[in-house]
View 1 (cartoon, one colour):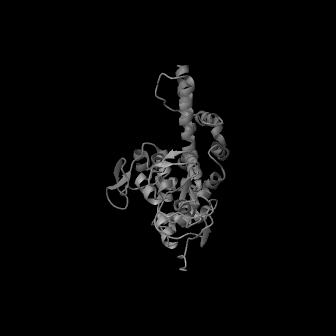
View 2: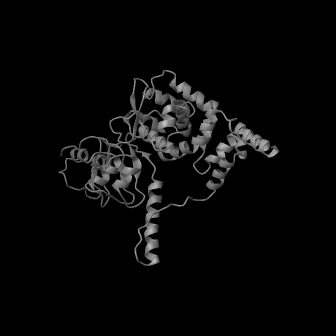
View 3: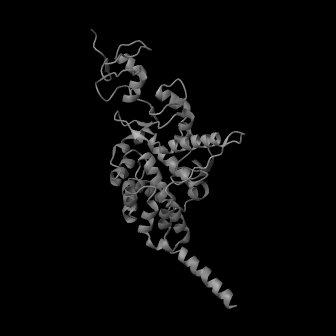
Length: 349
């Protein structure tokens, strides 16, 4: 009987200890790593992402979060082909996106901001200025509540979420522990912390079996691992020409791989970058939105071996516009040292 009483006491105490965290605190402890990962990839302050998640889900308690893993209330829109659920928001039974995992919701939120023209000015702001980002979101029409920016700022300051803007994905769990020291008594959290101490996370790959030498098999594995690491390392940048989003390809990759990573169709990538094939080479510039009709500088001297397409990618200007401005026939290529006009049209002789 004493043993039974002791066991019950341990269970009750354990449950009591687990319930000492407030809903918002539990949410931050669990999802701060996701927000920091997204910050590294898309340059969106982790404090903003976390504050939005807290607000939209009520600390993870909303129906959309619990049943659909949808943490940011993103509706289906015309380009969504995944799972959906009906939920009453601004109107009865609206269509909302459903994700297999909350991490997918966090990345989709990043893409939602990064790839829509309404939010382009956000990415010109200082990433450490969460107040500017909060007001920028409201100004861009992210929410209808007139106090939306102040609500986000209050969430950030009340929970010290700005601390996560100063960390990275390797150190984020230490930042969480510093914020909530009692987590040192949480075995699950400490196990995650120990796991994160590894210098690098191994990449799991599946290599088809074939009767060849070990050296060739290992070479195949190394190639797949290298490609996975290359894809992981790609970061979105803002081009000086109007802040257009682009990436620099770190290794030979296919357009299909980039399409899957950023959730942008191959056809759009081909159209925006005026490509005639789907193979990308190391150091290629690839735009994730349509290029401009004009350059950010007036003129440029073509380098030896540069094509019109090379110059258009370098300055974020459409190839057709580049030909028109320089009064050149389509297919004609510049000579080394040729003065290229990027804003106004080349003067007639």
